[in-house]
Length: 141
Image (tube, rainbow, N blue to C red; front, side, top):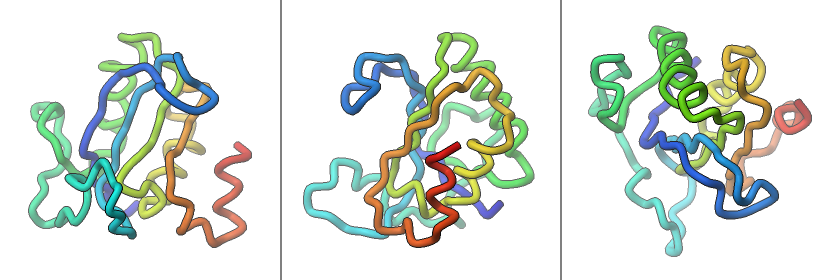
């Protein structure tokens, strides 16, 4: 997996879409391929990998941070222990920035089965990077 920038994680109540009113774990990823005037998360765009530290359990609340192969397992355990189990959440909402700049990270979350309590994963995307037939398999899982 390449490096992914995590800019925010918080338990919340979904305020829009088909899951409105349900508890979700919002996970915001950094950077976007667009620069829209109406963007409400411009602060997540144009983050530089070399300027951001890696995720560690000792600095788990200091954002942004990088998750990659070297710390993915600890990061997933952190999500499970600190949020999913603690708040009894079974839905993850991945947003951005643009999540599909990090397809390999999203696929790891969806397909690896590391988060056993997760029953649903929602992805908020601008849709411009869904250009491969395999991308749509993530939505069918």
